[in-house]
Image (tube, rainbow, N blue to C red):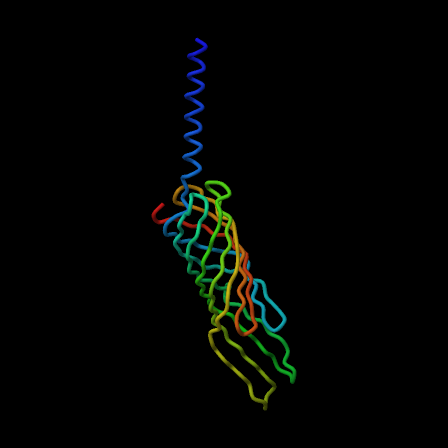
Length: 197
């Protein structure tokens, strides 16, 4: 009887160990993915800023190294709701306004699996923002208007949680610095799907 109980306990222990080992090496953080994002958008220009609701999306591909490290490429789209415009008073009167439209980004993200279903990651890459600068002055003086695109860089980080092998949620922060001395910060929540888990 004692040998039978010992054998049963040994078998159960081996089964649990095998299941635990399988859980450690099985991850859904691989392959193509797409996600929708929503959160707080802060566009900064001319020493001032505005906070608005923003939304966008991202798509990319992830690979897993040694069942623990995740690295991949990502493309993203973002905009403030109904765009975002900052206005300040000009030195000679009038108003200077800078408006931000669509933001496009391309970045690399890399992270570590702190648990089989939880990824902590950082990201960095290129960003491009469509903007408009408008200088309105009192009548009789010359106004100024320019519509253009500006490049820059983007850094950020976040935490991603796999709900299932296919669906996931995340929380992330990104900072974009544009070459015309404007910037953007965003804190986002995302919901995504993996196309080939």
